[in-house]
Image (tube, rainbow, N blue to C red; front, side, top):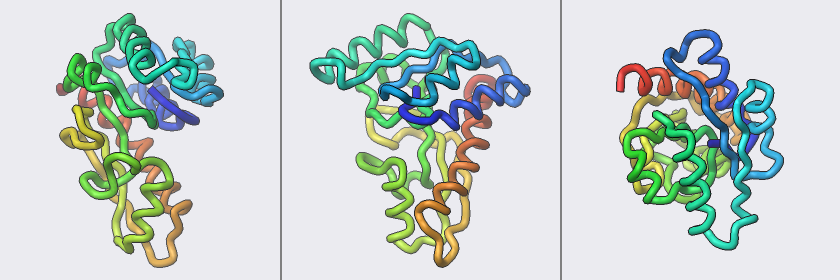
Length: 189
């Protein structure tokens, strides 16, 4: 599930193709954002690309119902939130307990939770003056960025760093650890 460009999705596609992810196959890519390049990445890879534009639903409940029906139709072993910016309904996290993972562009438990996504995270890291940041892959539970950590990796935050330069370094780490986490969850439980 993605909301934007899908570079983490591409890392997963590549990880399956080159064997870094074993016993994995992407059944579908779901995006909540019209024009998300991730859907094009899916189409180019021969993967079902599904747009569920949350703005085209009358309310959150009907969106969540359609999202649940769509996911259930694929019977996934694992759901990967790879830059998916919407909060997942509790009914879905309960039904797929320990089978939904998310990548977050910071070292959980710092700089996470509601409102901490995208460049907001990196802006907060720079503003706080910390010397280390990174990325975390964790299980999704009923909270926001509160599930158990699967893997995380750090990057330095040198003096003079900007949110943009930090984001570039963190994204490289994201591409690496999302592949490692997917392989680990699929093959080690």
